[in-house]
Image (cartoon, rainbow, N blue to C red):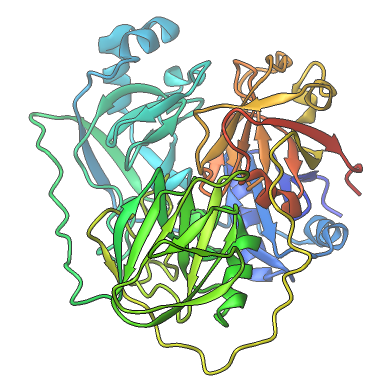
Length: 508
C-alpha cells in the first residue's frame, strides 16, 4: 500500500486524506474521481488534503482501505486553463500589516503580488473562490488570529502560500491587501467560475474601479403563495446540491433535514421537495389557490385566519386564507411544506438558498409570490408519533474526534465545558461561548475541506460548529465532528441556549 498518504477521521460520513503537497493532492483527486468509489458524494482537494464526503451508512473502514490501495499517476491533475488578468486597487485594511510581517513594506507587497504569475490550484470556500499558488514566496503570511464576520466582495487576500479573491461578501480570515471589481462567479456564464483549475492568473495595478454590473431580476409571471411577512428569516430550502464542493459550491439545504423530510411526507411530497424554512416564527402567507400544507420542526403556534392549526397536522388553505406562525416555545426553525413543493427555478440542480455563497433563490420578503408545483397523485400513510420536540434546556450532541484533535492542548475541555450558543450564530455555523480551547502551537494549518457538523477552533479559541451553509474549505483545525444524525438537532439550538458534547467512540 502507498505510504505517501494518511487517512484521518472527519466524522461518520467523511474521511480526510493527507498527502505531501499540492501536486500530490491534484493527482490523488484525479484518481479518486476516476475510481468513483462506492458511497462517495464529493471529492474536495485542498492544500495538503483531499476530503471525501459520503452518503450516510457508507463503510468508512472499507473506504479507508480502498483509498490507501488506490494507485495514483504522478503528475496527474487539471490541465492549464486560459490566462486571466485581474486589476486590483491595493488599499486593503491589512496591507500595512502584511508589509510589516514580510519586511517588504506596503509598496513591496504590491510589487511582489503583481510581479509573479499565480496559478489556480483548486477551488473551495465559496463559489468562484480559487486558491492561487505559485506566487512570490516572500508573501507567505499567516491568517488573521480572528476571522472577520464579513469580508467585502472583490477583496484580494493572502493566507499561507496562497492568494485569492472573495467572490461575494462572506466571513473570512485572510489578510486583505486590495480589492477588484472583476466578477468571479456568474451563474449565467458557462462555466460560472472565472478562474478554472490550472489557469494562470496575473494581478495588475488597477487604473480605476467601477461598481459591478447590476444583476437583472426576473419578475415571476404568476404565483400561488404570497409572502406577507417573514419574521427573522424565511428561506426556500430542499435537501441541497451535493457533488459540487470542488467548485466551491456547498451542499446547503434545510438546516434541520429531518424536519423538512417529515413535513414533505405529511403532504405526500418527495422528501427532497422544496419547502420554506422559517426562523423563530413571524411567517405569514396568503394562498392564491387551494393547497394542502403541513408544519414540522420547531413547534411554532400557527393559525389560519385566526383558527389554530396543529403542528404536524395536514390542512387545506383556501384562496385568500392567511397562514401565520408565532414564535415557537422551543427550537428555532419551522418548516412549511406545500403539496406539490415550492417550484421556484432550480439553481445548479437545487432550489436551496445558500446564505454564505449566495447560490439559489434570494431570502423571501413581503410581496414575493411563490409558485407551487403539481400535486402528487397519492397520499401515503404517515406515522409521526416518534417525532421529538426540540429541547428548551441543555442540548447534548454526540461527536467523534476530528482530524486535528491534536491541535488542542486539552481536547477533553470540549466535553467538560457547558457552552452557550452565541447570538452571532446563523446557518453557516453556531458560535460557542464558554471559555477558549487552548490551541497547540503548531503554526498555520493549510486550508482543507470542511463538513457539516465540524467543530472548528480559530486562534481565539472559541469553537464554531458548522451548519448547513458552512464554507467548503477552511484553515482552522477541526477538533471534533458532530454525528450526522445530531446535526439537525444542533440546527434547532437558539441563541443563549446551552450545549454540551459527548464523544461516542474512537474512529475505527
